Length: 423
View 1 (cartoon, helix red, strand yellow):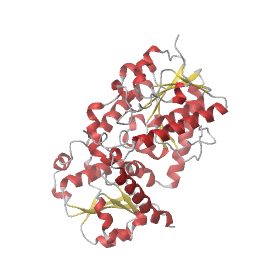
View 2 (tube, rainbow, N blue to C red):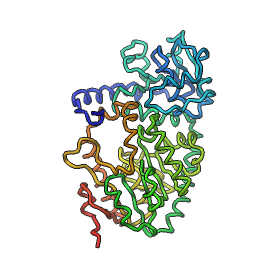
View 3 (cartoon, one colour):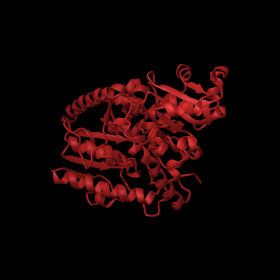
View 4 (cartoon, one colour):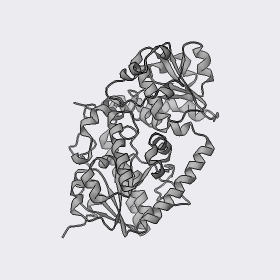
């Protein structure tokens, strides 16, 4: 049984949830708001496998760290290690992103650790046991935990946003203006269609070939990029994704997803819409599709359909409510929905997916790369919040004249109530 299906330890999850919130208090109380010019991985790295893991993550998550000093506390001297040996030390669940030129810029620190802890702008705790270290307790205001066994999505979400956190304000502002210009181009394309259709990855997605989408602006998500036959039928205008472990991670699953993503974007000239804090991570690592990337801020405090003057959405943990419906609702009056099947009462995992649109043979590499992400997710709570916010979005849209239609059956009541019956 994999970590996603194991019985949940509710008391432990609740404890970790509370503990994680407490750890954030010093940072919230701190009035120091400095640009991140250097960071330190702590505690001491004593084996080559861990060192390779950290260097691999630095290469992927910080693709443009020329103005950033990256330090690792260790006594392992990389200059005495063959680069191939370092790459081969990675656990098999990871894809290797390591590059010799980036590895050469990473500093190994083996002395004056207290001095370096004090001077570092950001301390990344790769082993949660270091939280008991008195040296760390006094620096909690600048600590981030990137131990994948710590709690829920703490590690994966922080890593996904690390590149953005290290960018200057001017850099962020310039990117934001660029994303709005791309969104305006997308609005022009959308004006040529009569309605919009969003595609979830539930089992009913396999019935999409029963529908004609020639006159519909199509928005697909996530691993649907694997399904070449379906993509040819849909011919997507937009591809959205936002999951920190499946789409922005370092596992072999994530690598395979991004490989298929690149192929789909280039073939259909589809725009990619992702959260703003992750957009440049994709642009830098995947230059072949950088011109199609649109980063949307996720800082709205209520249901928001993005416009040029209010270019943002409300944060959400599901791609349908985070980006698909807000984007479709911003562009069209009529919105069709398919592949959002919801969850059966006896479901053990999140919910079922269309098997043709999943990388099922690589899921184990995700479980091993980011175990706490699945271990600490209470699916019933997640689903309840998802359905509630979905209802809010549809209600907000209908109040301003939007119309929502479910093209196939769904376990989600608000969608089933809007089911179009086929003739």
